[in-house]
Amino acid sequence: MPDHDDHIQHTWILTHPTGDEVTIDLWTDGESVRVEGGQGESTDGGRKDVDRLIEKYCLRGYWVTAGYEVNDPHEPELPDDRPDGCPECGQPCEFVDLYDSGTAEGPAWLCTGCRWRVWSVGI
Image 1 (cartoon, rainbow, N blue to C red):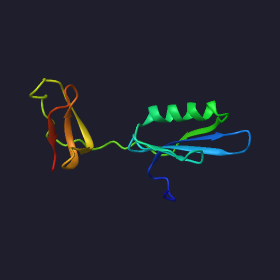
Image 2 (image 1 turned 135 degrees about the vertical axis):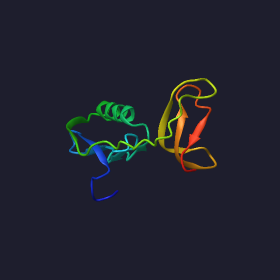
Image 3 (image 1 turned 90 degrees about the vertical axis):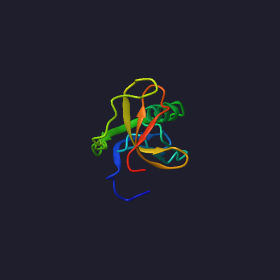
Image 4 (image 1 turned 120 degrees about the vertical axis):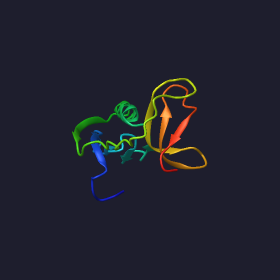
């Protein structure tokens, strides 16, 4: 784990009556979640996974003793080539910072409806 917090958006600290502590960090990418202590989980489910992990540890006797903002979330710069809509279904498209097609990965526009069509930027 890095010894700086530039990559952390929000931190929660949970404490057990035995004195054990668990730290849950939501990273600035808005998706990565890392747990220090406890079972040391790592997920890419964002805030919904944070809520699930807090609930899991609270059911085991922990309670939230602190929760605080660390850094602002990452807001990717959107490229100027946003498509008007998906040619397959007409739904709008959203920008994904790192899309993995299985054969290539990089920034891309994905259809919010069928997600079939991918517009890749710089792949």
